[in-house]
Image (cartoon, rainbow, N blue to C red):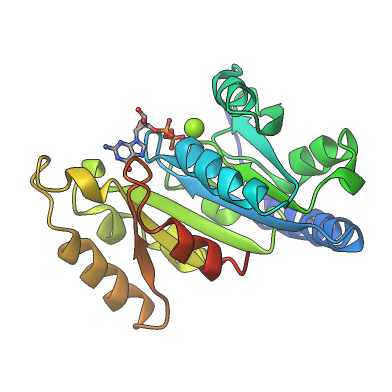
Length: 216
Ligand SMILES: Nc1nc2c(ncn2[C@@H]2O[C@H](COP(=O)(O)OP(=O)(O)O)[C@@H](O)[C@H]2O)c(=O)[nH]1
Ligand SMILES: [Mg+2]
């Protein structure tokens, strides 16, 4: 039987917050900008990170990716094959990265070698929301192939992220999804204070807008 003590969840989140603040200070002390990419499996996080990194590398920016997954090295392999320096970070069982795992991963990296670190979180729209990692930006990536109801079903992750991205605009018609519905839901949820950026990683649209939203 799994018993959760009263207050335990709060303590875990508090401890995570403390370590996230340390991660933030560590990366800032080395002049690194960092981004946590959250979102469902298949939303296009890996593909997006590869494209954004290519654009930054063309400008001389030194980028590294942390590939967060429960098990395996699939995304790590994709980053590496795309010529993006990467570090693999398996959670083992957990459905999200946490600040402590990221701290351990950062400790294995040569932080003086990078200007930007992109972290790909474990694919889902629930668990990562509660666990900031200490990045400059938290980004949620969703795609048209997930249907039009993800904002209505997953308030927390959209409220906890700084930027939302709607990917796979190129196949919205093919999957019978009207992007306007998702954009409207997002606007209603966030009170119109934040913008959801539409993009197609495949067709390479919207990528410059994402970089400028990340101030990169
Ligand atoms: N049509 C289309 N496919 C995409 C787009 N972005 C990603 N994909 C595809 O969607 C699948 C999942 O992408 P992936 O980057 O692995 O998603 P992740 O699980 O969020 O990392 C892959 O087959 C990608 O090639 C896009 O903008 N349009
Ligand atoms: Mg991936």
